[in-house]
Structure formats: structure tokens, C-alpha cells
Image 1 (cartoon, rainbow, N blue to C red):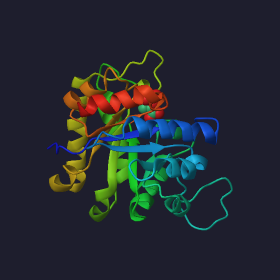
Image 2 (cartoon, protein in one colour):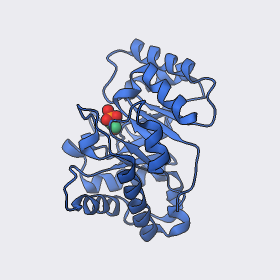
Image 3 (tube, helix red, strand yellow):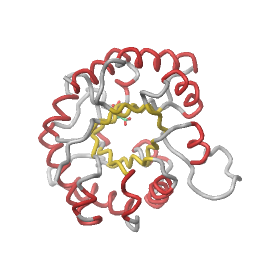
Image 4 (cartoon, rainbow, N blue to C red):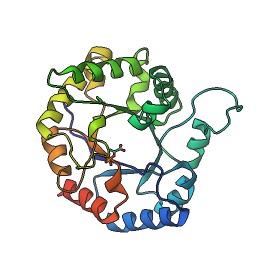
Length: 255
Ligand code: PEP
């Protein structure tokens, strides 16, 4: 059911840092810190205005992603940035339906359109899902199931090879006590997600769709979450901007 893959570590910089110079410095320090580590796919998703300069700083070893994209026709969309524009920057990944966007911007329908638009454009879609709360009754399983079904219904199997699922329980994202999900519960959720993917696309496809975990990942829990949670990678927010911590996370995963 779980295929072992090269770990995929995605840094979500959100609306940070404040300047292009800082973005370049962070990127360059990360590049230097992990230059001898092989066998891990690292992706950085900076604010879109920094993608170009971060890409120039990183060269080819670390890939780039965007935190969102506009999927639709025409150019009369003030404030939006199209998939094609993002593609031209050289970014390869797009986060779709991050909980911070679900809260204020993206509806389930828009998320479905974005996933399908991103995949059809040949870019990788990182579909973010996750429950708001963990109640005792296990309702969160239902919440996660609805999100997956809603985002992936109707997606043709041929587009699934660039699909990544990032399971991010909302309560664990940016958690001020830095509380991540424990790896046992993560494993249970990973099995559940695989089962839903299995029901939608069949076993052959489901087993190849990577599942990442995100939510208060840090240097102390990263390896344990990956190994015992049996996920294919991590989506990291705050700690991805703390260069030394981020480098240490990658080193620990590799060790
Ligand atoms: C995120 O924003 O996707 C995230 C996981 O944030 P953090 O690692 O800070 O909890």
C-alpha cells in the first residue's frame, strides 16, 4: 500500500521574508547547508514575487513551487497570477487548497478546478487537506474524506502522476505550542487517505500518490513523523525559514 520514495520536503514560506535580499540569503544558506545531501527532493515555495531571484540563487538542485495559482481563462483578473506565468518562472509545484486559503479564499469547487488545472498544465499539484479539529468521535476522518472526494472527483487517471497529497491537520499548522500530530495517528490517517485514493483511482494509481505531513514539523519530530507515520515527505512552514533548523531536519531525515 505504501511505496517507499525519495523523501519530498516542501518549504512553505507563506508571506515571508519581507525583502528579496532576505529571500536570496535564506535560499543561498539552505543551498549551502544541504549541498552534500543526496536522495532528498527539496522544494521551496516563496512568495511569487521572489520565485525568480530565489531560483537564480538555488540553481538546479532545489526546486521551486508557488503557494497558489489562478486557474481560468482570459487575463481580466486583477491581482491574480496565472498558471502559465508561474510555469514560466520555472516553478514545478503548486500548493492547492492550503488551509489558510480555504479559510478566506478557496471554495471546494475552486480547489477542484485548481487541482485539475495544475495537473493538466503539467505542473505538480500539492493538494492540502486536513481537519480543523480532532474530536473524540473521529469526525475528522469524515472531514478529510469529503475534502479528498470533493477535490479529486472527475479527475482523469492520466493526470494523477503529478498529484501529491499534503495532510495538514489545521489545528497543528502554526500551532503556538508546536504540537504536531503523533506518528501513530499519522500512520492511521495515511492508511485512511490511501484507502480513499484507492476507491477513487484504484490500487495501482493510489499506491504511487505521495502523501506528505504538515503541521508544526521541527527538527525533533521530523524523522519520527516520516518513519513511523509512513509518509513520503513533509510540508514545513515556520521551520523552513529558520535556516539551521531546516537544514537539520533534512540531515536527520537522511541519517
Ligand atoms: C504550513 O503552513 O503548511 C505549515 C505546516 O506550517 P507550520 O510548519 O509552521 O506549522
